[in-house]
Image (cartoon, one colour):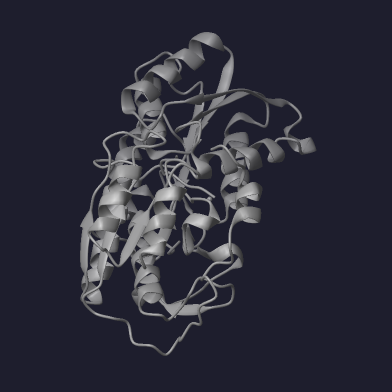
Length: 353
């Protein structure tokens, strides 16, 4: 897989992307201990070799996570560790728990997980941490109590607001719009959607109305059906935002073969390879995404730094992340990859992932 050098390493809170609830993020923060558990970091400690790092995506055989975890595996190989990928075939709230328990029994050094539900996985992740396993979340966060650091694609606010801005430009800041999300409990998706709603409160969007948030559950056929349902329920719909790679591809496939092609704008988060034909046939004008391979790569290096004692997850700590350079741990143990890239007919052929 060749990646254009100018593609920035990164995010949007999510983020997509595919996505994946009882307490809110703020609730989770207040109940969580400080990241790092009081341990002291030694930034000069060598990166250990032979580390066992397991990747647990929201679901296996999802193109987005296949790319992300390949990037992670490349990083683990670079620092002479061992990697594996396990996970459910569906993105339900509790589907990852049994995998976490098995990885804990296998005594992995690091679990890298994209949480389907920010709270459902926490008890199992706490058990893993109590057993000495470091936990890195990527793409979609868990409650702070369940992990050491979160690798965020980009800032959640940037993603949520830019999604609205991209769509508004295409529909002249006027008309009814809908969101086609992943699952109702997806942490990153829900955070992005809150920022979308806040962005829509600005005066320049007074003629835009969010009429529906639909959920395709990161399933291709359900996302396709939900898109069809949106157009039936709102025949005057002007645009759809789908901040999930599965959702945007399914929505584009429906629109491309319908009378709504060219009349209903679609944007969101997708990979260039899956969206190229829809951009070229005029179904989609612009969409955005970060480099998922870099997301997995950074998550692996963060896990290696944690397991080697270079960082504990406390704000202000730094670590080297191979080709991505030095990264800094922010508030609540968040490490941001970087800003997403906007893809359109002018640049999409420059990317291959």
